[in-house]
Image (cartoon, rainbow, N blue to C red; front, side, top):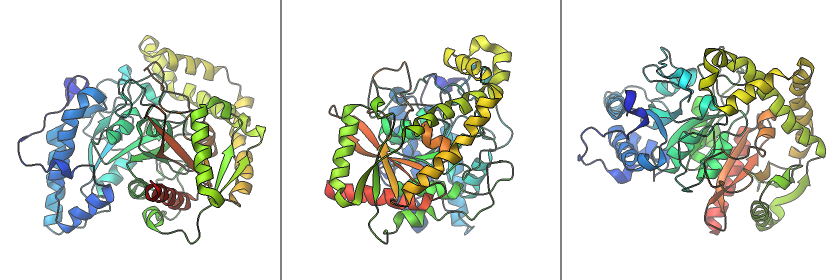
Length: 465
C-alpha cells in the first residue's frame, strides 16, 4: 500500500500466482533464513514475496502497516540477489526483510509519526539506523503503525495473538507484524514500555538494549534521556542478530559512545560457562499485576529451583517510576510543543494532557529526577553481583480487552529510566490462552550476558515442554 491507500487497503503482490514458496516465510528463524540465502537454498525475492503474501492475507484484520509498497520491496530484494550473484560483499542482514516503526526516517518512504500534523511528511535522508540496515544488506520493507507521536493514544492496529485485546503501544505495528508472521524482524522504540509491553501482549520476543547502544539520529525524539531503540523477533537469537547489527557509534546522537560493538549473536548462541542464576524480584508495585501473572512467575521460579532465588527491591524503587514520568513529560513538553502550536485541536487528549503536565514540572523536580538512574543502578549492581538477570513481569498480565488504552507500562518504565537492558520472552499463557511475557532485566551495559541467559531460559523451557 502506498500513498493515499496506505490507511485503507493491504498491498498487492506484483506477480502474485508465481511460485513464491509461501512456506519459506517467517516460520523459519531469521538466522536460518539468512544462512539459507547465503548457501543459495533461498533467494531474497522469494522470501520477500512470501512476506507480502502473508501481509495480503493478514493485514485487513491486523492493520499493522502505515506504509508499504510491494513493488518497491521486491525491487530492493532483486537488488540484494544481484549483489550476491555478482560476488559483492554482503552484510550480516543480507536479504532479510525488516519492518520499521513509523517514527524512523526513511528516504523515499513517508514517515508520519502517527500524527495527523505530519501527514505527507517525506524525509530526504535515512535515519542513522536505516542507513546501517541498508549497509548490512537488509530490506527495509515498510513502515509499521505507531501510536500518535509514540505516546499513549491507541493506534488502529489489532493484536493477532489476542483478538479483541490491545496490541500495546507505541510500537504496536512492529510487534503485531512479527506476531502475525508478516516479517521476521521489526524495529520499535521504548520511552516507557513501548517495546517490552507490545511484545508481551502479542506473544513475541522484544528486546530493549542498554540506553544509547543503538543510535537515534533521525528517529522522532520524545524524551532524549529515555528514548531507546529496540527490536522484535520470534526468538532470542534473531533479536540478537538484528540488535548487534544496529549497535554502532553515531556522533549525531549524544547518548552514543565509541565503544566496541557487542557480540550479541555469538553470546546468545553460546552455552553459559555455568548455569545462570535468576533473581525473582518482588517489586514495590507488584500489586498492579494480575494474580495470574504473579502466580505464573512464581511457578516458573519454583521450576528453576536452585537456579533462581527470591529478592525484593526496597520501597525506594517505587520513586523511580515517578522519576521516569517526570523526565518523560518534561522532555515531551519541550519536544512536542511545536505540534501543539501548529494544531492542538488535531492532537489526542492523551498527548495534549502530557504536554500540559510537562509544563508544570519545575526545573528542580526535573533535575532531581535525572539523578535517580545512578542511585537506582547502584542498588541494582549489588543485586547483579548475585545473579545474571532479574525475573519480573513484562506487563501486569495478558493483553487487556478492548482498544481504549495501550495497557499499563508500570513494569517497564523503571528499567527504561535506569537504562538497563531488558527482554521479554513469550513463555507464559493466561487461563484463557493469551500470551504473557516473562521479562528478564540485566546489568547496564551487560547486554551479551542478558541475551545468553534469555536464550538459556528459552531453550530450557522448550526442552521441558
